[in-house]
Image (cartoon, rainbow, N blue to C red; front, side, top):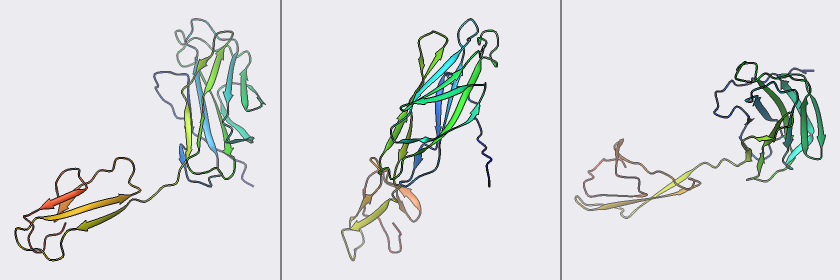
Length: 212
């Protein structure tokens, strides 16, 4: 059997080094694979951090029975109470960034699967709280995974004529389904962009053989 799992930890240069990341962010209904989460932390204080604790409240739409840790920067213990995952780094002695920028950073990576049969539009949200010794927690950004059905846009074009005479104003009206909240329209005549961002295009200068 294949018991090997490889996950790359992206190296970023974020403004706030205490952050949370997730992949994939958008999945189709029926998705039963892994959601991957990374919590990065950095000691921005002026002395070494003896113990670091990360409390991560997991969304109710996640199947906590599938929780697996797949990467870590330092030795840790993990426990789950209800839907709160507790990652504890005892005696980590994380140096402050002012004296050791590279050594002041750490991370925990885990993955978990969603519950079955989540409906279209379900959003899975959460954030983590990072405790450096006895200091107040640092709250990360909120991450989100969305169950969403991808719809293919469908465009129908209606015209106000069957047979046209030279110089007659011809109207073309485009209607779109599954085009999102703000679709952008671009009309072309013989492959050349023309007109503005408008579902209606009118012209009195079309000639025989022109293609709209």
